[in-house]
Length: 406
Image (tube, rainbow, N blue to C red):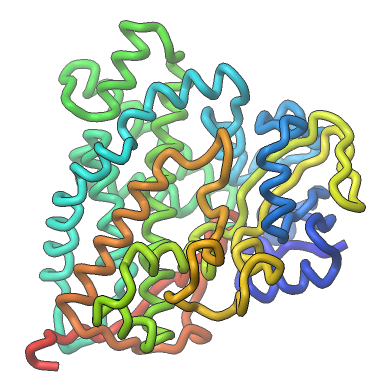
């Protein structure tokens, strides 16, 4: 049985190694943090098998179905709050109720109205970064952009609280976080969200937090715990995934100057670049978890009732059965060969997918249109985020030059 690297330091190589062990579903030992006890789960590396599981009513999202929950999971398991969060852990009518409460905030029309504001923020961040000297594109551009967007969407207007919340979310996703650090992160998140709810109860506005509070207080469609945990989930998802997507997209384009040239010449679109990145270098390492409601046979593998399945997203995106030259980043692929599951599929498809894609497209367009960008380090030398759930370069040093003086 293979053991998944909780630090996810080489995601493409790990996916290929898992694929050599079997087609589709592979048993793996999973540890949330190095040195912690492991639990046995199934890892999916095949696109069609992943779609089969995600479409099947024989699998549930509720961890109550998992035979390892909670006895085999240490209390310090850093992703436990994510696994048990509403929207991620609800099925059926409960899931539909919660999803309907926030669905209107993420419609295509609402996302499009935010495009201008996202562009303004991108320009502000780009103008603040110096030219002619090394700058970390992740820290100064990819990270603050989605943090500001999601904070404005939720009415979180205190920059100090926003930064504390972002740091705490980073800590919870880090496989090397200590129990003490995880506890501090949970405390910070609870404090910031509690204060936000209290503030919006007394001064409501045209933001998603106020809308959720009205659903809680006036329509009785949301419990207090659901309100708190949904805000946590939506904020952490809106911050982490999008910054990884911007970094991974920029790095892929810098690694492939011919593809970047297609963008700058208008031959390819930024939407295509983002889609290919989601396939080639997913901002998420794994999608966790689905649990078998009953014994299920998929191909020549039988998943027993109560067993867990996770999805290795970059391996799925690079499945050679569905994509030609899967380890090559190409913007001239037909859409059918850019298929990915980075935003999941089916009833639990990510509500913020359109927003994340729009933010990444806008960030890339503003960046590469207004600056010549040169990498300062090779991909192999860049430190990686150490996380079982998300994956990206931990920093991206670049040299920015005005196109007029380049």
